[in-house]
Amino acid sequence: MDSIMQLAADPAAWAALATLIVMEVVLGIDNLIFISILTNKLPDSRQTSARRIGIGLALILRLALLGTVAYIVHLTQPVIEVFGRGFSWRDIILIAGGLFLLWKATKEIHHNVDPDTDEEGEAKPASIGYSAAIAQILLLDLVFSIDSIITAVGMTDHVEIMVVAVVVAVAVMLLAADPLSRFIAANPTVVMLALGFLIMIGMTLIAEGFGAHVPKGYVYTAMAFSAGIEVLNIFGRRARKAKNAAQRAGTGTGKGAAGHGTAGRPAA
Image 1 (spheres, one colour):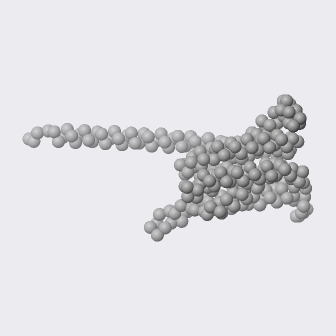
Image 2 (tube, one colour):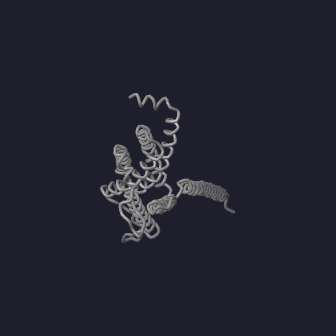
Image 3 (cartoon, one colour):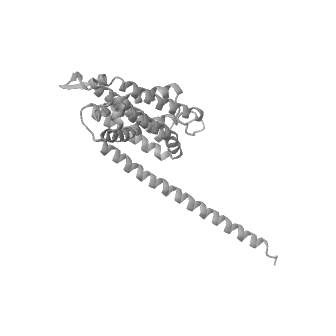
């Protein structure tokens, strides 16, 4: 208890907490995009529960990993050597998670570009089983959680600060999950952009696994720039639709008035 009070009175601890919360929230964006895309393929009645379960599992995993910080740190020690390069368990997990993201995002992009069709020639929406969705979310939760905890360990030595940062970040994810999923579902082009983000994240995880450090600032700046361009496109499409609808309404009113005037003239 005394140690917690000492941390609460330490400005450096508050600065570390604020920095760690921001980092955890940013790292959680990757996880949230994947959860949103995956749960949108479920029936409407089960999407919210799947998102909450997926985010809840992320919280449980991260808190459980925080309880084994001493062991997690050793995950960075090489366990195998391939062509003269050592790979740790963290490297192996990141490479496996990156490959999974590449496979999943490529598969979803293929379905969006060349969707399956039914007997009437209409595109069939992609679907996934509830258990399969939860299993895939759990797999990515594990990958992102390990990466998140190892990054947190490198920023502070206080487990209490890590716990608070993780809880706050997961709470933000929980609040943002439903609005983000609705936004993605309402804007089909955003789905393709988000899948592109997942491919970039997957490649980043693989690069990190092979020891090539990719500054996260570059990755998230590219994502923010692309998202900003897409927001402008969305506003542009809405403006054009509104203008076209107004023009059609005006044309229809003009035709109606002209027809009414003709009908009211006496026959010659």
